[in-house]
Length: 206
Ligand SMILES: NC(=O)c1ccc[n+]([C@@H]2O[C@H](COP(=O)([O-])OP(=O)(O)OC[C@H]3O[C@@H](n4cnc5c(N)ncnc54)[C@H](OP(=O)(O)O)[C@@H]3O)[C@@H](O)[C@H]2O)c1
Image (cartoon, rainbow, N blue to C red):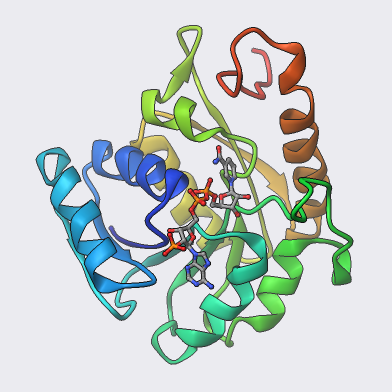
């Protein structure tokens, strides 16, 4: 698969690492093409990776703050027919407090901004970037919870997750993103209780 990633920050790099480990292609879309090119150059040893200004991919990952995600979707709307959009965000404000979002979840707000033909899937919001780089915590593959209303889109995301050495877990329809966003927030909020800051995983056992 060909995976566009909007953003060149911590999660863009981490998700790209797993996508490339799975043998898929990455196309970075940055706020500036130079940023996307720099990150593509940096990761080139891991697989097929490049930079572009437009989305022309099977999947678009929104590796941007929640506040920017609907804007990015609108900005690329004309390029998204047939593209699965992955929302990885945890909606927090500047004080790192959970935001009140309309429609039940950030993912549903992003879905409302997406054009027809671009199904939105929630995934990766409970996995910290550092753990994604490694792909595991304590010798266990990360669980990636996937919520969405389009089964074919979810299956594509599950394959991407599995190919990257992680375990996909079907969390149900897109409205379950509300619970996933709460879980993602809780996971962040308890980090001060751990010695291993942001190196933990939310895992279903077995
Ligand atoms: N970090 C984690 O462990 C983690 C875990 C789970 C989920 N998440 C979610 O992942 C998302 C990204 O987090 P991050 O930690 O990767 O943040 P980050 O390192 O700050 O990177 C954010 C990226 O978004 C870009 N961006 C900001 N505003 C934009 C806009 N209006 N249009 C296009 N791009 C824009 C930034 O570009 P510039 O640098 O040019 O401003 C940057 O490349 C967030 O929604 C967060 O909730 C993060």
